[in-house]
Length: 479
Image (cartoon, rainbow, N blue to C red; front, top):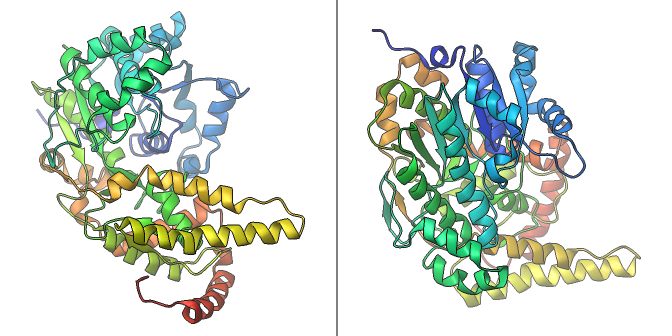
């Protein structure tokens, strides 16, 4: 029997997605509509927020520019998106009886990308979102009459006490079920006191709870067809939906944007270590292909796919810095505080000295000027906030792991040439230097909101900053 292509597999089938309003979620919805045009319905779990109804949130999502290509190709495609009111932190997802029945009767494929990605989230809240949420979804999946694939999005950065991570689910010494029962019995203060002991070698509650969720899902999935996808640091799109697409300051994007503005210049990073970043279109394509493979091949065990670059196409933090700065000089930001530069160090004393010199003193001087001219001071607060945000990433920029990624390669071997082209995820093909040209132009356009037409003026401004930079630079450690 001839194998179904991926678009043929999705033809006439309905999909349920959690986390659809997030960065990866929006890209997933757009890709399904554009590359699997005969998909039946795409149900999105949405909750009312800040006075906005689910209907308003859906309208906001559909009007997002990420869907411009879909609109141009088929304006009716967006009518396939259906909002379902719910909340991953509520029992049964807070679904109404009619909405639950709608999912049970119609959904064939489930993608779970809902999670709290705050590294400093309180343990109890992280458990609620990242562990209990997926387990509640698993119970809903058990009831789905047409379910053929449940794809759970995890992270490569779990079980970080290991230097090398294979594509398998690792089991904690702590029983996750008993742990959840214990935390449910304790008040918030008691949980805060024991959290450091529970986390052990995990740097934060995000990585800890993601590992627990994997273990519980594997142990309790039973007959539910489950697969796990582990992306590393997700960054701007390489090709789709638009080259350079990124819509937030999270993770590496915020730091790279701050460097381009000349705002952030000193970072605690080991330049020799691997920076495992992955353009967002790669894990999205992999997820779509994983669901196809899971449904058509029915593996006996829960397959785990590491969507990372360090194993197959490594890029060091030093290389990232070099390419980033080169690209910012080609495509400078419209309003810069200073010439784009970056000092990497892992020496605490050297870091603190330079932080004071390039962050603290300028911030106070700016605020002094603002105060004298009657403006509201803000720079000290901004730098404090930026420094705190980057401090949560320091563990990842000063340590290195090897994420084995064999399963995506094996999956590619089972795909047709056309599917490989449409749903590309072979990280060996990424050319990092050209990628950062795409990344920086995307960060400039979508995050900093600099119109491409402002580039000529920005380049002239950069020339003036360049003269000042050369005159004031006293050492050559920037490049």
